[in-house]
Length: 62
Image (cartoon, rainbow, N blue to C red; front, side, top):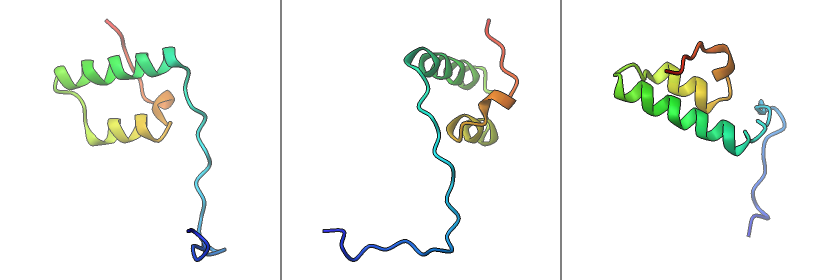
């Protein structure tokens, strides 16, 4: 089925991200919900969480 699918050699590959633990996933979801409810969820913050760069984003839990 995928015999004719080839990836060009010159394409830049993004590094694979480790899957967060269930506890970390729950913390991320809770933080995103909190940010959304507070009206503070921006496309940049969402992208940071979805690309694994959220550790560099300051987060607070209340």
